[in-house]
Length: 136
Image (cartoon, rainbow, N blue to C red; front, side, top):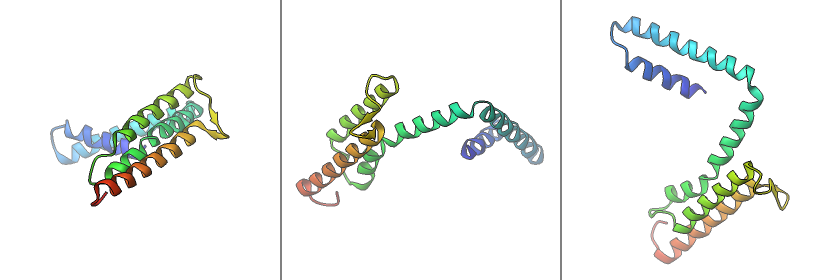
């Protein structure tokens, strides 16, 4: 991705010494080489990359309710949010290995888990707001 290419350029430049113009040229050449290598790799294995990207995004998105609960509240999310998020991630991983069904009540398992975790995070958020008061 673009951010990884720019990060590579910054990291590569930080390990080099010498004239600024020479450093920029070497950095740009390294970024172009990395970009071309990524392009060739993506052309050769595009179907696997799409699947990997989808699975990676789905797994990462399961953390969103817990993260939103932590960001929007002045207190940490309740332990129930943390535990249920961990269980949700384990269920998602289990579905990738075929141990858990891919569909649940007509929804993909990751969609069902995400909706469930969002509901739990909202309930926990409002429970903590009512119980403890303040900016929750």
